[in-house]
Length: 69
Image (tube, rainbow, N blue to C red; front, side, top):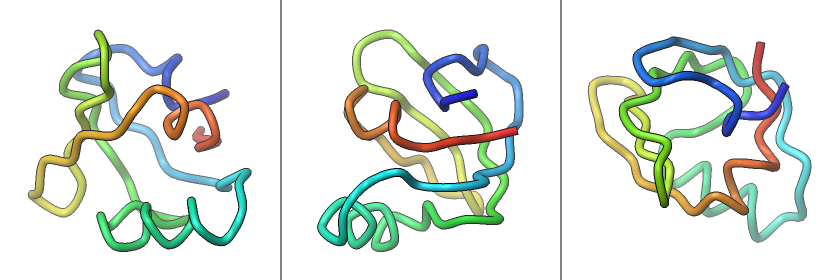
């Protein structure tokens, strides 16, 4: 499933990022890498997630390229 399908308050582990080098770099700089567990704070408009005690906001297009379980 993709990150945009995770409900508010739920946790999910990033399994894969389906995008090019530029997207991977942007997510890496925000702490969103494969193996990390994220908690969805908000999924209306841009996605707001918590990773490693930091809150990160990413666009829905980016979030749809993040595969989670």
